[in-house]
Length: 288
Image 1 (spheres, helix red, strand yellow):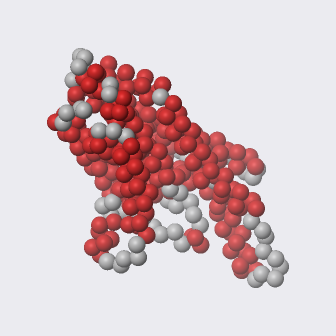
Image 2 (cartoon, helix red, strand yellow):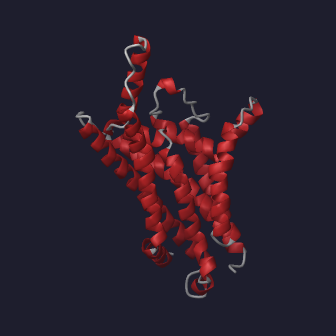
Image 3 (cartoon, rainbow, N blue to C red):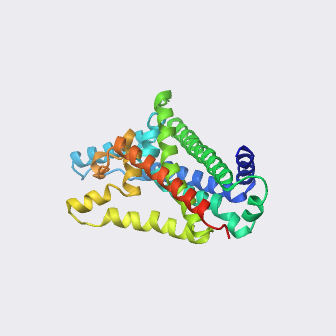
């Protein structure tokens, strides 16, 4: 298994698609996590004197709250609670699908299995290598956010304070769990369809279209709410909301349906289920 793990690490590290996805992830963090918000606040026009004082004060309070969310002490609240890692789920879904499905298209999986390692060793090597890179993507996103928040603090001439080491560790853990479940989802789809195109297409359709549609439908029903509470998107949002929301109260952003503790348990269960399904399909089916 360790030889397969080392080979998979080398393969993922040498693949250009891995670093393209990493670059896209950094752009997502910078653009949606910091640049757009800071540009909006910096370029928002000040209300004229004709506007009531209460309205002017409310607008200034909103701008201050948005700027405060961009500061280093709110790094985890901004990136996790702000849904940036939820957007990054699509990136790691693609990475998981590429990790499991590329060799079906290349026709190299049969060659690998005809050598010394067995199916289970090859699969575990792929999963471990994928897990290492998912944690790397989490750290990469947090590092990009930290540098961006440091720049905001410098531009605003504000004192720099960082989250505590324990909070930072929990942030890495929650981010890794969010990425693990979506990476395992893409991995399982690629094994199921024995390739990457259909796995990536269906995975992105579910993550970007179906999940958002389920959340947006104006259905007021206890049964429908219970159904929403077991979806991947709601549990991802619930776990990401552990550090709170960076949005001002005036934005009236709805609270996550699932509590963080329950969401973490659900995501662990989902990840284990996807890994188990991928293992069963990989072991019991022909590789071609």
